[in-house]
Image (cartoon, rainbow, N blue to C red; front, side):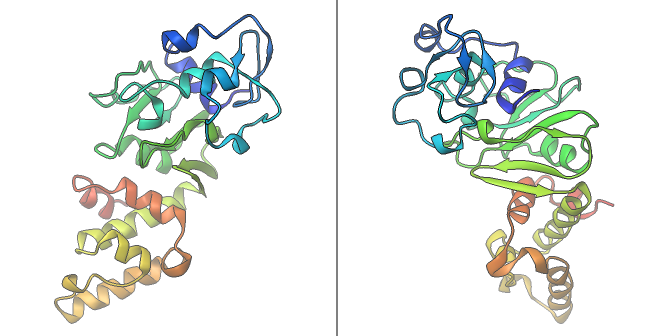
Length: 252
């Protein structure tokens, strides 16, 4: 059994937390409050993570007062050497693209740390998931811890991705459909917020054909827009950048 934090820590080479935090780890065995797994070495949660650490209600074992070295490393550090800044793709055993050039964290084989400047690894894994275990978590603000609350997916059926503070559950085919349709709307000049609202960007409607194009694509996204717009659409729009709009729009 593994968890997102244990998987990423292993792929990074099991690095130690920063020195002042690493010094708090002792030989006290216990269950980690963050990942819920046993560990022979732990630190006191309040001292190591701070009494004001947020989102404790989402800890896998909130009754525990101990935190393991893996979760301590994943939840510590300052920019740019902190995981909360980075979108994470973890696929053990696979060769992924190098991490973002400004990322100051270690990343071994199967680990890719990126941001919205390069979303290719995220959209690729979500459209064609690998057969084994894998994790994707998407950081939007860079201010929240996202990885500890992610999901370890297995195989290429339904998956769950943590998008900032939201779980997004989909299938590769559904994600590919939403990504492609949203990219076609973006390529036609419609803005993200207008796509979410289900209302056309008026400056993009220059002719009747433009309006027909909007209506056709909007109908294909009807379950994901307006007052009920889904986090799957948010995830797709996050993946679409200026450099990738046309690739996604023209994808099969």
